[in-house]
Length: 365
Image (cartoon, rainbow, N blue to C red; front, side, top):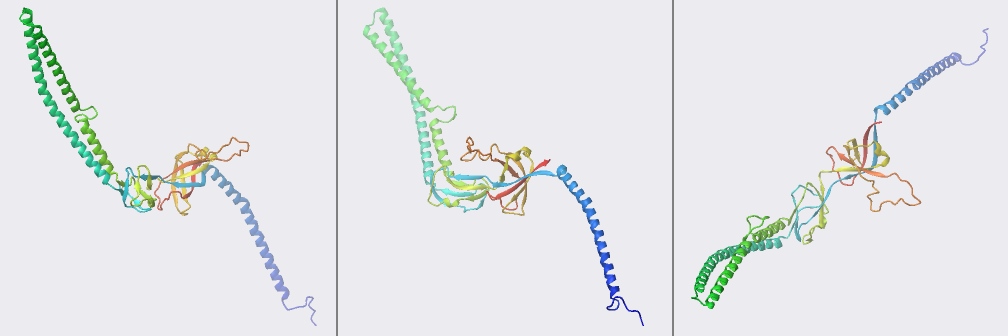
């Protein structure tokens, strides 16, 4: 009879368990080996990468300063009429792009056309006056010759009367009459000479307008002023840009010189005003490159550079400057406006007032 099995059970069960234990032991050994290798890699490679990254950041990476307190700025031109009058037509609409010289609106021309006709009448009057003065000068010149002849005759009669008086053949009454005739002829000559001088003075021109009578020059100046005012009844765009606030223009509304009627946002000159902390200015210089990101266009990146650094903090130019001479004063880091010039043309419209994020490359540490 066969010897009994000390481990009763299914046939071959012990062999299967032995193989499973062997496989599990091998798997645990392999896992421990891999873990050791990973630990070795982590303990050697990772510190090396950290050290290399720190060295690169410290010696090779360019430092940058960033602020999200930045806004797009554009030049805005307030357009006003230069003459008084009623608006007769409006040629633009709100947010319309215009070119320099485009007509924006027109003003009633009637008063200035009348002013031109008045100036023409003044010119004609001045010219007629000059012609009359020239005629007076000619007439006075003839009278002047006759007065000189009369004076010469009176003087000759006086000389003859004096000669007769010296020889005792004349009376005192005749001598008095001869003297009076000479004095009268002399006074007449002086009066005519004064009239001639006055007429010539009225015909003379000055150093400011050589060759032109002053009265005619004044009338011509009035004509030029009226013509200028007439041209100014057509208000044109001073530069390329976009028109805003057109709603204030209404046909029939009165325009007064110097009162803004609409605004023009210039197409060129867009920039960013970034307000950096005062502690950032030590490393910032004009000319340093900058990157501009706009909140309105998240994927847009624009290149720029530091154009200039403000001459004062924002609080210095505020309507109510801070008063720090008090007992409860708290130190606050000030913001200084930095003008960032945009070096490339934006594919999207740059609207004045858009929020931006500016990063300035301030060079290696």
